[in-house]
Length: 130
Image (cartoon, rainbow, N blue to C red; front, side, top):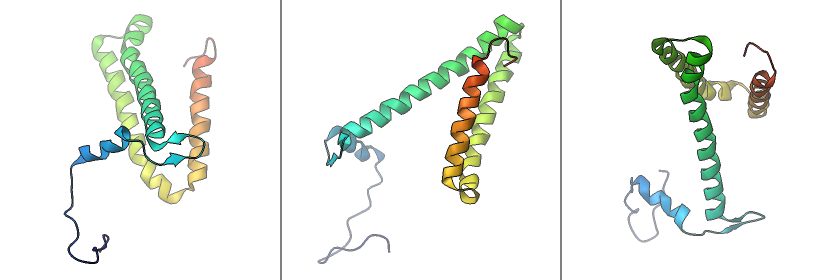
């Protein structure tokens, strides 16, 4: 049994309400050395991830417009471009868990950082086909 019973009785009932976990964001918890309270750290993580997703969605939504204006894609072709992008994102997310079982985490992190920098560099090169 994963949850120990208290000395004088039964284990507390399992609460499956996901919203009760939000109290971590609302109450300041113990201090984390050099970062402030856990509330502050969680808010910084939340806002950082939110901003990354806003940038990703901005890229995804502008992809079809760019292809239509610069390369003459029809609306159907632009939609298929976004479907292909979403499909590859889905498959790449599914591949993380099996890769983590086979490859060391440090190697995965290194490959992710290198591929991220290569993606940024490919777009930054003038007159490249990217």
